[in-house]
Image (cartoon, rainbow, N blue to C red; front, side):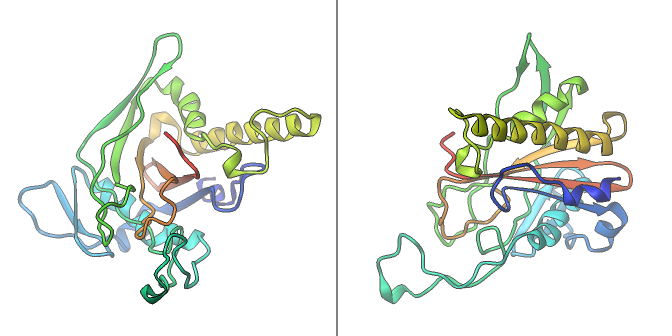
Length: 255
């Protein structure tokens, strides 16, 4: 059933705002990012973009393999293009490259941090939020990687949390958040129902009693800050035999 998740869609979203990628654990082990000997960290491995990544558990090397090697396949590659802010004609065009932003997807690593789902009458949870500096060349790039954090706590809160992460707006689709017509209300209801259905499919394929969950952000490498108001988040699901990543692209994101 987990393999079928790759065909999941949410109604009325623009292309590539929501992507699910699934891979067998054995397949990820066979193509895992290169391990690097390092006595100072539990797990160290090399990103395909260069540089080393540290983590606290081997599972993060497999998740990052899924990010760097398999997630880019889901995106339409970008063609050579001019930076929308670039007024210098001599600067030349930005090179063609893999999506979502033309430079592929980056490993996130992990410092062993966790998010705990708790309820005080409602789901009480701060956003994930600490970042690694971008890899350049723009040192002021706003898209700092937020490493993987494991999601723990009350499993009954997982559906609410997961649907809550799918916080797209009208910038991301053809529906209206505040509809004034019957058609608009129908489209919004269809989008909301699709989010709930996707959450149910993911948690059915990766049930709490046999799975682990993780969340990170800014895996997409916006190397030249072309979409500086966008945010991308990744939610990972890991069982004994499969791993899945849910990619959430939140465009025109204001926090």
